[in-house]
Structures are given as structure tokens and as C-alpha cells.
Image 1: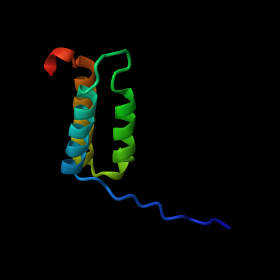
Image 2 (image 1 turned 120 degrees about the vertical axis):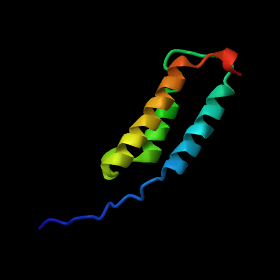
Image 3 (image 1 turned 60 degrees about the vertical axis):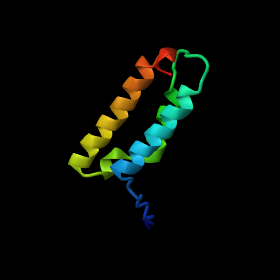
Length: 83
């Protein structure tokens, strides 16, 4: 006997994801020092917030990937001078 559990996730809108990214950037920009793996925890939080990107249709998925990539690039290139 197989029991199937409905694990339907509510997908986030592009606006919700953008707001989450802006709040993570604000949190990171308050840090006094930059270190190796800067922003890794926040990227994990963003991934958890978004959920499985394969639940999105292909066009939305590509936009979500772009937002994730932009945030990762921002974390990699952020400097204290940007404040």
C-alpha cells in the first residue's frame, strides 16, 4: 500500500523573491567585515525561501535563476566601500 502525501508548495512571486533578496542584502551590508564564504548562509536562506525551482514553469524558472545568480554575484563582489 502506497500513501501519497500532497506536498504542494506555494510558489513565490518575482516581487516576493526580490523583496527577500533586498532584505538579505541590507542585512549583509550592515556587517563590519567581509570574510570567505560571505553571504553563503543568506544564499541558503534564499534557496529555502524559493523552494524547488523545478516547481516553476520554464520562463519563471529562468527568471528565478537570474535573481539567484545576481544575488550570488553581488555577494562575491561586495566591498565595504559600497556602503
